Length: 144
Image (tube, rainbow, N blue to C red; front, side):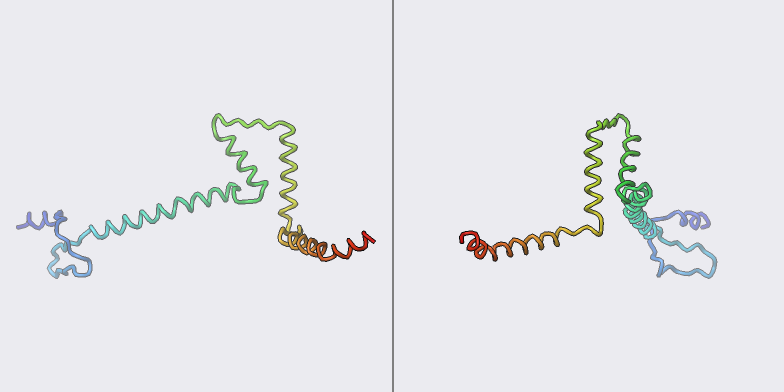
C-alpha cells in the first residue's frame, strides 16, 4: 500500500484541474496536473520571445544611434562597416565633395524655417493662374 502512494507521486496520466483538486485532511499527497501549467509557461515564453527580440533590436539600434540625427546615423553605419569583415569602402575626394553637397541640401530641406513644398506649389499655381489671367491684357499692350 505504501508503494502505491509513492508511485502515485509520479503518475502524470491523471489530470485534475487546479480548481477541482481534492483536499486531503489526512496528509495524503494530492495530485495536481502540471500539463496546464506547462502550456501556460510555454505560451508565456513564446510571447516573451516574440516581444523581446524586436524590443531588444529597437533598443540596441536606438542606443547605437541608428534612429538619431543624420550625423549619428552616419556614425552608426561607419561603425557597422568597420565591424563587418571584408567590407572596405573607398570614397574618392570628388565623391566626398558630392556627398557633402547632398548633406548640405538635406540640412536645408530639413530646416523647420524652410518653406514647405506644399506652400511653394500653391505659390506657383497662384502665379501661373495670375499670369494666364493677365495674358490677354498684356498681349493687347504688346500689340498696340
